[in-house]
Amino acid sequence: MAYADQYRHPADLPSRLPLFPLRGAILLPGSTLPLNIFEPRYLEMVEDVMSGARMLGLVQPAGSDDDESPPGKSVPLRRIGGAGRVTSYQELDDGRLAIAVTGISRFEIVGEAESGRAYRTATVSYDRFAGDLTRGLGEELVDRPRLIGALRMYLDEHNLKTDWSVIDRAPSEFLVNALCVMSPYGPEEKQALLEAKDLKTRAEVLVALAEMESATRGGSGGTLQ
Image 1 (tube, rainbow, N blue to C red):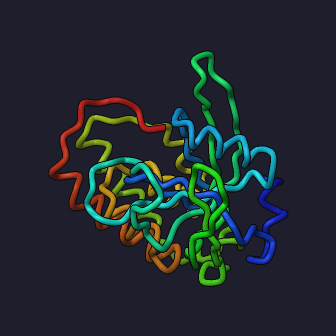
Image 2 (image 1 turned 30 degrees about the vertical axis):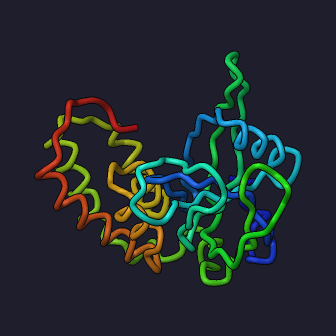
């Protein structure tokens, strides 16, 4: 990803980010999350993002409220989120925007900032997650056979298919982070994956979740891409 080369140190990233609170969604380095944007506040946010640094912060709301993206600016947020760059942008006929956001680094919210806009903005720090900017860091420590084994078991038990040639070629960092982002787990499990201290730990948490969930979750078949 050529665009990622410009982000080598925490100082290369914006210290203020527009925030997209979204329950059950996380963003990790190198992973890509597609989003349909339709609320006026987030349409405004994306337009502002596209005219600026093209960066936004994805963060989960705190608490047990069921709202996917709570209204207003008073709902508490998790302190750790994922910063990403808008790498795909499409205007749809019905006024929605279809975008894709690719993860660059995790961040910690230092405090919210008043922007005068309808969406929330925060001052953030990337210092705890400086390693996110070094591609492939810790890949050699990932137990890849166990990771692949857990994935294969999950797919088999839920009658899902994937392109194993793509899986075999994928770097371990990309594979772990992409699987975490697309995994079907709940907000607490997702946050645990996001906050894992390093790639090895994240892979271990992901495998443990897969080994527990694959025996209990039902599946209707399909294809994992």
